Image 1 (tube, protein in one colour):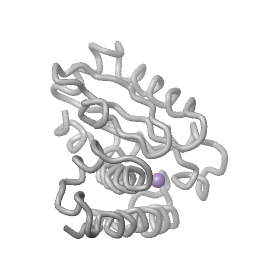
Image 2 (cartoon, helix red, strand yellow):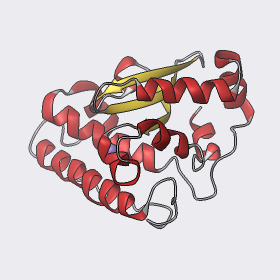
Image 3 (cartoon, protein in one colour):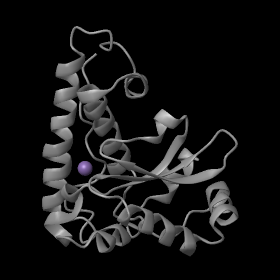
Length: 191
Ligand code: MN
């Protein structure tokens, strides 16, 4: 199997000012493309060649895990956004957030605080277990809650390459601006 990079459902300048056109150009166009190219190179001629990407993530380590997970994580991240996003979730996800965190505002604060608290590169995830209970899951480097048996719902990328062009060292500002572009219809459908 050869993985191809899906085309984004919006133009590269559509998420500004939360994420600039230049950051989308580099982050999705170059960083994410490199992870997919590396993934394709690493699985060629191996037992992983015909496995689903999620299975590769859960059964590999080292360079293959890093590139497979980064390939998956970035697609999940960029396909969570819309120029018409923002606002609040509704339906079952909204109820689960309120039950777990008390309020949507409190969830947003806890999520960003956990993302700011990651030392170095990583991802801050919202994930659910099989009972529907929600967890904020910080992961370093290429980490993904699939390896914990959890279902990812939402993720913010806290690698410096995700925000440095637009926000320099201000990670909290970068993460808080992402609430303006989260597509809660897509994210809610994952719950
Ligand atoms: Mn990234």
